[in-house]
Image 1 (tube, helix red, strand yellow):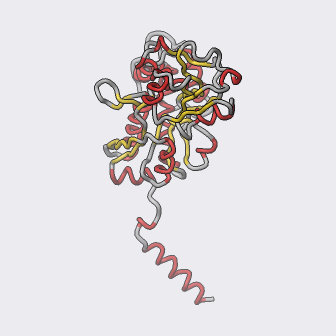
Image 2: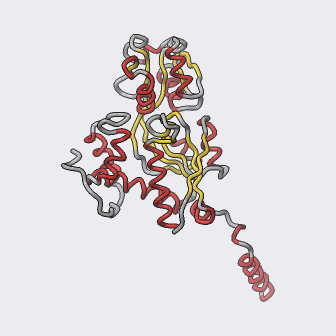
Image 3: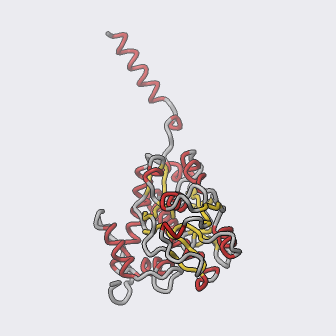
Length: 306
């Protein structure tokens, strides 16, 4: 008996003597140690993440990344630098996160399949899969109208999956990104592009919004848009969620900082013009399922958002 106790005690002493590095380092621990937050993003997802005319990386999701950075700085007590890795291939985003090559990827559509490999924040946008087509190419976007039509899709995307389900007899044409897809649509090589409604509308603004329209009225599929983080990093995920919740709650109560930030991208006179009532209703739906976060005093906009 004493021999067993001695062996157990020796094992405990040995375990306590092991260096801290023998345990997996969490994302928050790594950021606290290095001062670097590594994000993965595409550059053609207007209004979420794209390069503007000044060659700057901007967008709704990029603003949210900066809010997350500020939240982490407050908790770690040190300045944090954002390190950007451009990932054009959607199929590589999750593998890179699982390999600890990136810490955060925002502007990502939630799916239960993806949720098996990474964790998602609370959603800060709601969208769905629709078609962008030149006027006259496709009339209604019904499943019957897609038979034999050439539909441009990004490989392994939700747009590709949706069209395969809605109309298996559609002809899928793969392209790498928005620029290639719009070029093919302009040149008549495809009849429509299947993708995220907000991103399609955002990219159309850069080309010629009057030449295109979105079909059908109701999306083929709906989903939330959120940030992805590595699994089993609850402290980091809490910081991400708190930054997003502060943004949404600030918008709802009329905090000018947050109202201006959101409206710049998806509100009145934004890149994509959505009614403020629609944005507020969606934010309230998310907020009421979580505890309200006290906000620091800041100027409010005149009048209610509704």
